[in-house]
Image 1 (cartoon, helix red, strand yellow):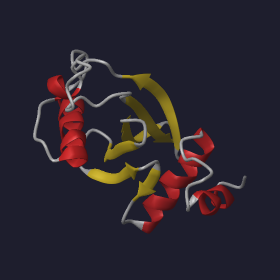
Image 2 (cartoon, helix red, strand yellow):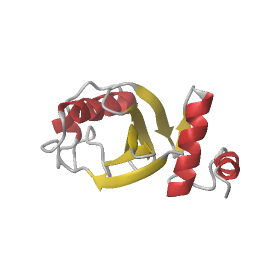
Image 3 (cartoon, helix red, strand yellow):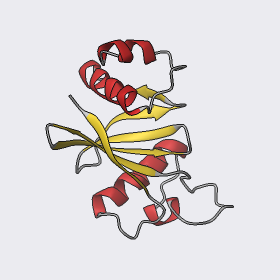
Image 4 (cartoon, one colour):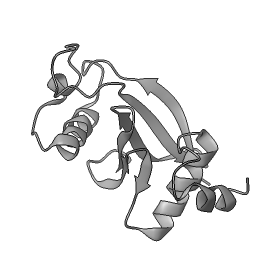
Length: 134
């Protein structure tokens, strides 16, 4: 069973690994279509529309093994990557989980419900809640 753990706010690209910096840049491109580096995406500039605000990184792990790295930003958006890679496995769009792989969707959706990351108003909330045994 996967769980969202190790939540940390990200306000600068300084402490990111090269893969994490690439994940931030790709997240930004998925969000607005602009190909910009992590430093720009995480800049402390209130007037820059390219900045990913409220950016945080979560680990998604099962049985002590890191499976995914989940980036949440802009309050209602996010990108979930296979751990240690730039392979996008799911996205968060207007708070909801979008994932083409049914098994992965269920795994991530139930973990999001357990972590309080999926709002009850989401159309899939009840499905994931029941699958989580809640």
